[in-house]
Length: 349
Ligand code: NAD
Image (cartoon, rainbow, N blue to C red; front, side, top):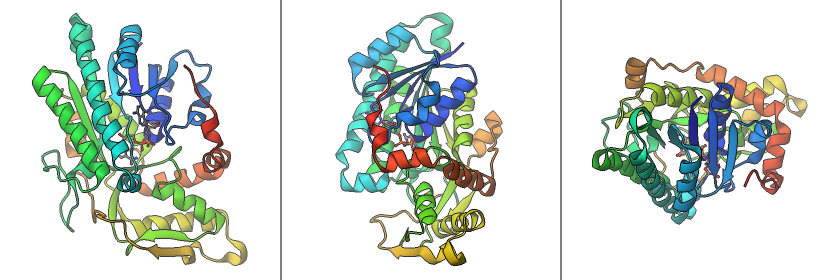
């Protein structure tokens, strides 16, 4: 049985990854600081599971990370822990540098020392996988897509901090030989996403019949990937990726923000019509654009598909319908986020 040290495993993607890994029989040591984005509720089904060990702590705490590595001897480390919300990075960039840059550096140093002390097959098989974003590549015009060779051009404090962490990972491979892997993924959506992000925010507001804020003209384009497909991509890269390489991950599902919002409106209208049958699209309200808002992201995940045989299982249409249904069925989870009670619970030591 393999053991993974997963960081940020109480957040949106990390928790989906942990739930999938545990279901597949792996053992997970889950290190999470439980910032506002870390939600113990998401992991409640694992409370009795002996293959899940939750540790409350910071990736930058070297004493703690060294102790976890020595105690649990993981076969690989998967680093999801990050400050992840672009708007928050505009209001307060320092926390993004603290975790995404300095924290990742500490984790890399501990991982390097741990890996150096391993021997034989364990040392050969060890991997450090860093989870990153397509936002490091900056903004595209109407044509083309990001490949692994696209130069970095981050435009927000969030993407700049992720770009810095990607470069540190690269440097630890080239300088110390640490067997690293990096994945750069497009926008995720699906179960357990914090309702500050576009899709769950719009679902909640549309359900309540509240105004639906859309930045600028609504024509910014993102590629969308169902979170479960991102998790299978990470597992595939972990198993078979070429050490030192980066892999782009995407859903081949470019949509304008306004299309995403209208799709959610139509799905909810069909399931829960508003009083008087008022179409939810009428709730759309255009608001002042985000400063430095990248216009278009599109990602070419051909390398991952060709070399490692990964394919997304969901189209945008099937994934968004499942997601709307998940939020409808899990309103207590959302309500505990919205009223803050999810923060009262704390897991583990
Ligand atoms: P999230 O904000 O939902 O979760 C982040 C988790 O990290 C939280 O549980 C938080 O408590 C934890 N954390 C924060 N600082 C920490 C620290 N110093 N030490 C330990 N834990 C800490 O984020 P997410 O959307 O799940 O994203 C996970 C990763 O995937 C991030 O690295 C992000 O850059 C990347 N990513 C996200 C997307 C997306 O669409 N959400 C797309 C591509 C890449």
